[in-house]
Amino acid sequence: MMYHDRLSILKLRIMALKSKRCRAGPQSEVFCPEAFLNVVADKLAYTSAMFINIELLDQFFYQASIFWFSFLFVLALIARTYSFLVKSIHGFCTTSTGRR
Image (tube, rainbow, N blue to C red; front, side, top):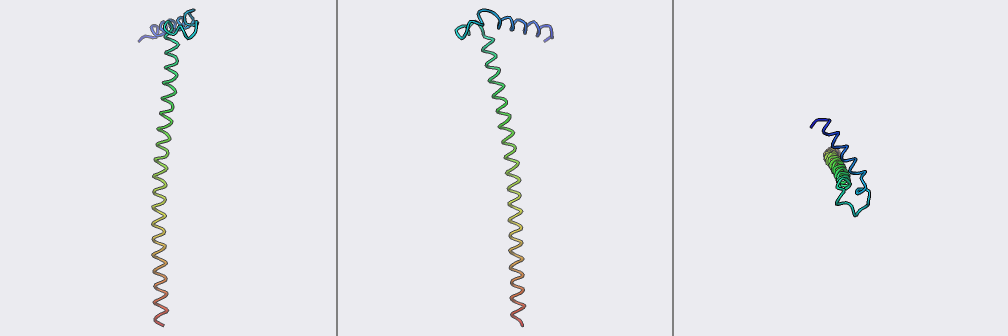
């Protein structure tokens, strides 16, 4: 669509919004679809923004859950290693003192 065509369409839409029928109030919504289209456009913009925000939050929590799962896994490995070392040292000390 050429810019001239778009400009003429926008001018027609502005003229329609400024007309007496459009300014008459809610009872004139049949004669003034532009106002209705503005409301629909605003609602679509709000809905799409909310959808994007929800997707971003979902991605954030997904990444956070992966981080915390990895962190807890590493902590469990450290705990197992520590427990193994404590048991080994305790067993070494018990056997070395028992032989004397």
